[in-house]
Image (cartoon, rainbow over all chains, first blue to last red; front, side, top):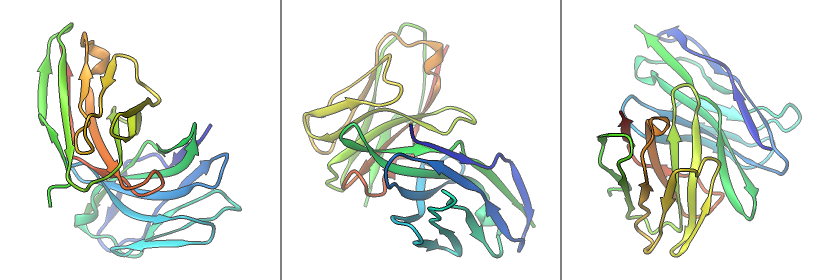
Length: 114
Length: 112
């Protein structure tokens, strides 16, 4: 079945450091890929998405490229801020049993210190 | 724009009690979902609905029931609450099955 594997956290970075959170996936079809972010006490918010191979999703300085050859969708940001502290989830959407369902990774907690 | 609204935000139940978690969305989305989030485990799909009157099981449906009588509302019912159902529950909706999902703020449920 479908699965998403993302790097274990927690990750602690200093402000303005470079961020990479690795995400790889397995899927039977041609999934869409997403990164969601969850701030403390809140629900998940869509951060960025990519729907086909070589697409690059970007938002708020974050980027991720859909790499079919390596089945990866790594999240990057060139300079993190304290306000980026949150839990980040990689997810894929694939058609199963007649309907699309999201499969999530376990989440990576990011803490950015001043 | 309210988006997806979940009530209550917190609840403590005793073993064997029942309750309904409410979810409503004002975006006219066809698809709605219920997830549970356990620490370090990501989100697991409990039930989903592709439209009013249509529901189907997700990955972890045991101990739960849902109904979808209107496009806006998708309540989740727990019958005979068990400690294993202690979790944070999220409702989500989307315009189509492959479209990004919009999440509520969650219901934190403890069963003692």
